Image (cartoon, rainbow, N blue to C red; front, side):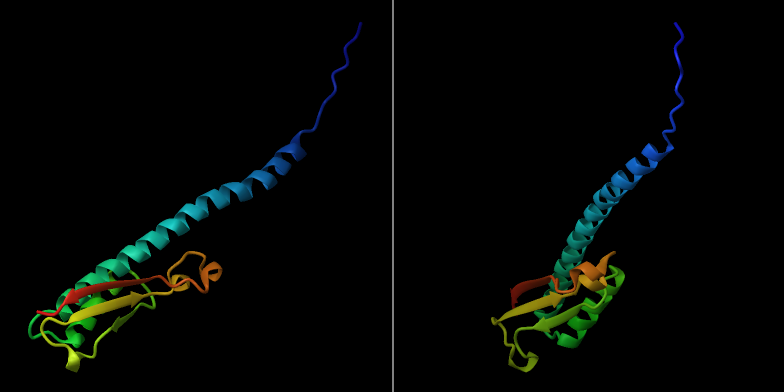
Amino acid sequence: MRRWKIKRNNKGIAVTELAIVLPVFVLFAIVPLELCTMIHLRHSLSVASYETVKIATRKQASYAAATAQFNQIVQDRGVNGATVAFSVVEANLNAGDKLTVTCQAPFANNALLGDWYTDKSPAVSITMIKE
């Protein structure tokens, strides 16, 4: 008996598998990167707000010096579009008063794929007592 060898062309199968699997691999690569970017942004805002409120609550301190420190920290950490807000007007802040500093930055300006996160804007608030 003769056995016939049939040649099969499997090139189309490989392309089809690639078309199905490649988007899944890209998704599994981008999602953790975006999550790490979110965590880094929130941590950077925490550091910036802590340092800002620490300077603003010192004796003989000014909001201008605290804001300059905030701007330096967010610039060094690569945070784009960050803002800082103080809960009490500088003229009304006396020793023993609580001061809350709120730092905020839009995630769309700091993400790899910012178009997905147009409304996400993490904010961090820290409160200290004026010396």
